[in-house]
Amino acid sequence: MRLPHLLFAAALSISGFTWVAATPLGQSTSRAVQRAAPPQAPASQVMPPREKDSVRFAIIGDTGTGTSSQYEVGTQLTKARQTFPFEFVIMLGDNIYGSERPQDFVNKFEKPYQALLDAKVLFYAALGNHDDPTQRFYKPFNMNGERYYTFSKGSARFFVLDSNYMDQAQIKWLEEQLSRSNDRWKIAYFHHPLYSSGEKHGSEVDLRTQVEPLFMKYGVDVVFAGHEHFYERIKPQNGIYYFIEGGSAKLRKGDIRRGGPLTASGYDTDFSFMLAELGKDTMQFQVLSRGGKPVDSGTLRLAEEPAKAAESNPASR
Amino acid sequence: MRMLLVLGFTLFSVGAAPQQESVNPFAQSMVDYKKRVDEYMKLRDEITKKIPEVKETGDPGKIHARETALGAGIAKARANAKPGDILGADMAVHFKRILAEDWKSRTPADRKALFNELPRGVKIGINQPYPTTLPLVSVPPKLLAMLPMLPETLEYRLIDRYFLLRDRDANLVIDMLSDVWPQRDK
Image 1 (tube, each protein chain N blue to C red):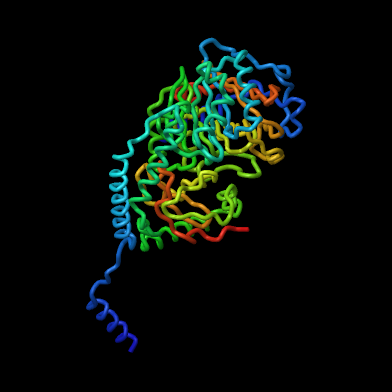
Image 2 (tube, rainbow over the protein chains, first blue to last red):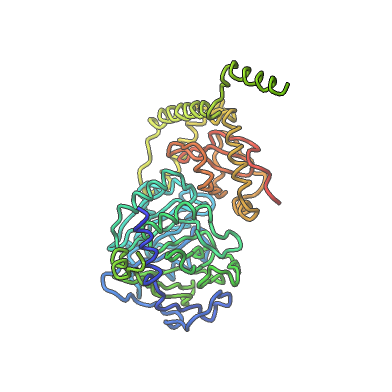
């Protein structure tokens, strides 16, 4: 069973994901860790989807504060949806900070995203370390009463994990689900980042040793995490693209270590959120600040199927 | 003389009864621990018959009410619970050893990161809810893999220097060991 993984890894190194474009970091991003080409879109302009029938979603993390910043990002999400009509939102944990009384669910979730909920946009939450696991019973989070779960959208399957408590039962479940998936896109998300340049927390190495081998073995394409209160795009690790978006209502200014080896792009000067589109062969992403300014954007190209790659690249066998 | 000594030692060794060594000194403790966990689950099942499982709902009030009722029901049924009632004195030695080894294997930065969102000197007790205003320390998966498995509704947690057994859906501390975690680095 190790062979497919080896072939996949080899294929990635030859013809796997490539950054077609990596823009970033407008004028307000003085803390930008890496500067690249000029932004594709002018300030305050959201890029529309590129493909028909693609899977479109938004990504937010560390949201449940009930502060004005959360509401501002909520407003910006609604605005962005006019140009980029995403169908659902993935939440990367810390969905409700502090007390979890009924009114907290109203003030820290329902009200900030009221317009999206009214428009029948679905939210799919992962549990963070500030979340009571009973949130899995809260219908608007669409967790089906499970700490960890999976769902599919078009050609993509999402694997939502509880990184607070990665017990053997969950690891076994993850392997079963991954091995069963023939989906074109495999996306995993959870709260704690396997790779991070954050001063406060940093990479979750222990967690990485448990789940990354499975991601590699079964060809997970992209991983999203929160926990760090900023946005970071990590340089591809073992053929996998890692993003951190934990700055959608909390912000730890200046927390990204400068000049670190992991950062492809980072933003820790203001609140932010992500938009993503999974097409036939590519994933487009864009990151916007709470003011609607483009922060980062780019295109990931889906790797060739391992078997096909092996055939076309005999040297990789 | 030397030959005689060797011969005597050999004869003594052959004549002595084989030493009785336990393969895993914690094997019996583990069995007993599992029995205590099963007993707790039996008690819990009785309580949940009176407090039905919560289904997915858009009303967080129902979820909160169920959690509180379940916690209160368990606390009432185990009003005299003492530290170690489930975890066990013999297993405490085992848990402490595992935790100490795990701690030793971590870098200072790793140790700090584990608890960096928690205040020091947290007060916690059996039959008390885990403080809802505090984050849950993520139990490192490598450590979790060393600990005996639990039913889905129970979990191990670390807070300050305590090692907790927590009922997840009742948000209740059902057992705890103190000073089990080495002193936090300053």
